[in-house]
Length: 296
Picture 1 (tube, rainbow, N blue to C red):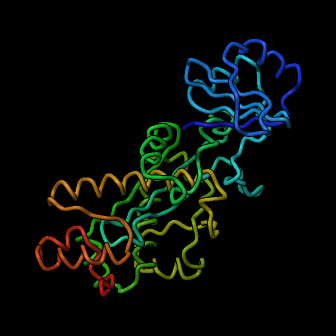
Picture 2: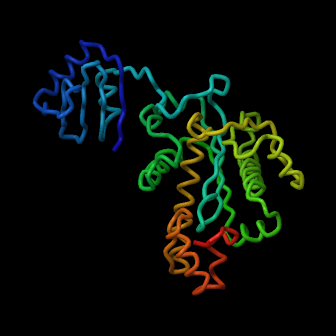
Picture 3: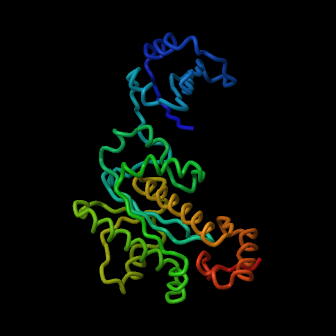
């Protein structure tokens, strides 16, 4: 469900909202809610004793415009931007690292300066993809995909397994994939070449560049920060876009090989991995990260 919270709403505005919608007034079990409305257009309005209004459902933007509501906090609780790295910038993140099944996918996403002002309702829903359920990831991607500039790099399982056999280091694989994705976004969008790049840190800066010494072209001047996906809008967008493509790849692999591919690396997943290793020895390498320890 879409939702947006507006704090410190003027009493006169609240009075107008109440008068305009009094026929839709309902009771609430929350004693902190002063007024509770269920509108026929599937919009739910909670007006709290603190003069905070929580909107849930559909047509939130129309309601905000109708009553000229001012969104003081444009950022969700999860997105607290570093003041030295304001938009616009490019965020980088990866998915598939801890899953037995499916590829390794990196994404870099450029978010423009005006993003917060143009889509405050969408901003309130953007956070680290690990904190969003898969159904909402699919919906969020559709809302984000045309509002940011992005590239994904997919290291399919067969190539992943060959690369791991060569390097024996997953951090190196992640570094290579991120570098490939950044090369793509700059090659396809020359106007972005001077953009600040933020990466969710999985190794320190020195190690990252050491992993890329054998690469012909290396994108440098990257800002590394841990848990960046919960601090920067661009990294959170990259996280969501990467997760979307990971889910779609899992779906494709299941259909192509007639298998079920549970996510993660728990004992249930290990049982499935071992089953496929016995039953499908030739194909299992095409949808499984073979270096993972499947011993239960």
